[in-house]
Image 1 (spheres, rainbow, N blue to C red):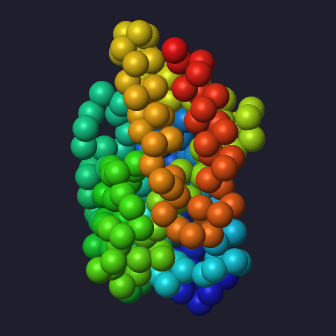
Image 2: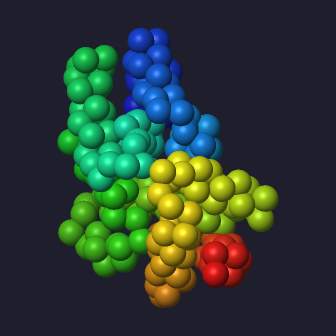
Length: 209
C-alpha cells in the first residue's frame, strides 16, 4: 500500500458505516457491497500489475460508484458522484483528495458500452479511467457460474419491468456489446478478458431469445 493509500484507508468508521448503509438501500441482488468488494480485488490486481496514477481517487470511485442505485431511475451515477463529493468533504476534508476526479470517474460509468479507447485521448490519467471502467465490466469475463449469477441479479433488480420487455432490452444491450470491436478499453484487460466475455455474452444472448 502506498503512502497515499495509507493516508485514507481504512475509511473513518462513520464514513464506512454510511457507505455500507447506502449500498443496502434498497436491497440489491447485484449492485451491493459485495460487488464493490469484488472490484476492490480487481483494483489490487491492477495495483500489482500496472499501478494507478491516482490510486486514492480510483479507489474512492470504486467505493462510491453504485452507492445510489435505483433501477427505476436514470440519475444514479450523478447522485453517487454527488454523494462521493459530499462524503469526502465531510469525512476527509484535509486528505488532499481530488474529489472532482472521483466524481468524474463515477459519472463515466453511466456510459458503459458507449466508450472507446480514443474517447480518453485528452485525459492525462487515461489509463486510470480505462482500467477503472474495465474493472467494473470484468464480471462479463467471469466463469460461467459467476456470470450467470450476475445475469440473474440484474434481472432481479429489474423485476418491476415486464419480463418480455426486460428480455428484449437486455438482449439488445448484450448484443451491442458483442458488436463492439473491443469490450474492454485497456489493452491489458482486452487481451486477458475479451474472449471470455464474448463467450458469456453469446450464451446469454442465446438464452434470451
